[in-house]
Length: 223
Ligand code: MHO
Figure (cartoon, rainbow, N blue to C red):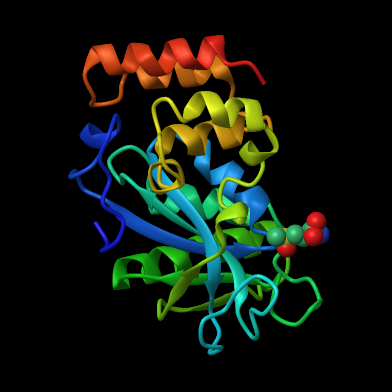
């Protein structure tokens, strides 16, 4: 677990198991936050800025950085290769630059193993696409989280739901790194359904009573 991301509360049991991180840029980061957050095996997501040199980037002043989503996942449930497929199957990687590097297709990798997997999947996708893929690929150097209103952006369109969530996640520092909030942020964009989430919640390594709390909240949620 990274410093400053201590997770306590109802999801504590989800953590301390084997984790891996992925970092992707594929256009405006709000959508990928919802898409990847909806996937079983994804533990948490954050949106932010990567790939550039500008110090202390923020949304209105990101300089040469790119909008990206950081995905922490459990590789025993979903593989890096699976995530790469979701990445390349859901955006066109060879768009002309628009607003500089803000929306380019980008991957930053965290290990030689990830680098090797990227090479293999990229070849496969190029064969399918029929042209070379221009995704900007390099080793990870830095990631700066975006400001709070950008995290779980689509879920935040539902203030009533957020109010109910605050019963189980009393502070923003619990909500942004929450797997439950990541799934709900997917559900509101129709990535994943309430039914699928109900089934998945029963597999979470947290006490059954806490699973029930989350399931009850999901089904009684007023949007
Ligand atoms: N066209 C979008 C981009 C937002 S995204 C975080 C908007 O401003 O509504 O780049």
